Image (spheres, rainbow, N blue to C red):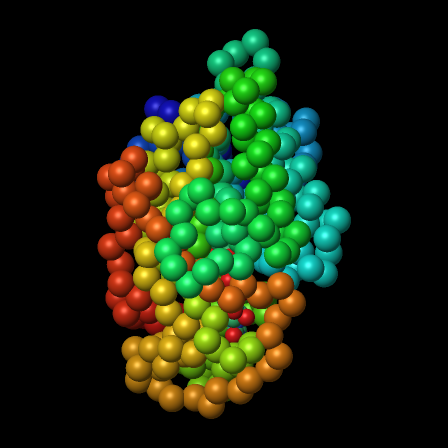
Length: 306
Ligand code: NAD
Ligand code: UD2
């Protein structure tokens, strides 16, 4: 039986990945510091090690026992990176370098690392679909560090022979995305507030757009990426190729929930991306996968999960 390490496995995306890996017969070890992840998210057949990805001794001792690593642990908020530049950098970039470094497993074959990058590496884009070669101009420290992860993945491949595959997630949503933090994903915040009949707030004019992808689709990409990890360090968009404005999202969410709440407006957030829509073609060609959950279906599954 193969053993997979999932960093950040108590978090939103990681916990769904762990469920599917266990269903597929893998043994799973999770490394998570429980900073935003929750133990109750975690499948009880997974082994949880509570600790920090920046602790090289700890990560080294765990990785020895594993056949591959899904590296999802991060401080997954652009706004947190604006507020704690150095702290988020230590986790989001130094923590990732630590994972690549121990994946070398000196004396043994390096293990493949599938890691989460982000659409934030592009910064502001045009309104059109963007593919992987689009210029990278991150607006936030979070985006800059995710781009740094991609650059260091190349180094891991070139110098140390570590096979990697980076996935640039666009805006992921679904059950277990924690709505309690103000920096959580907009869909989890809107869904929680609509269901509890509270007003929602739109930052800026609401015409900013996003490409929202449901978490079960993201998990399919993650598992397929195991076969894509090479020392060339490929990177793929993980997105639907469909856009919606935040204003339209608010209306759609209220329609699906059959509940209308007041919409308030506040100033735009620092470093907020105006348009974000990815081209899913490269992942489709290489993984033979496309996202298949529509926003309406995904929202409806999310509302049922509350
Ligand atoms: P999440 O906050 O739910 O999960 C992150 C997990 O990492 C949590 O369980 C947290 O406790 C853990 N963690 C944080 N710092 C750690 C550390 N120093 N050591 C060990 N564990 C630590 O976030 P998520 O939405 O599931 O994000 C997963 C990954 O996907 C992240 O790398 C994030 O940057 C990336 N991503 C997410 C989105 C999205 O829309 N959710 C978009 C693009 C990229
Ligand atoms: C998401 C990811 C981030 C990063 C980025 C990639 C989350 C939490 N963050 O950041 O990790 O990968 O995508 O580009 O998933 N908004 C409101 N009202 C609210 C909350 C948000 O109007 O109550 C707006 C916000 O200003 C932004 C949009 O909704 O324009 C999406 O915000 P978000 O925090 O869900 O995600 P984003 O795109 O900043």
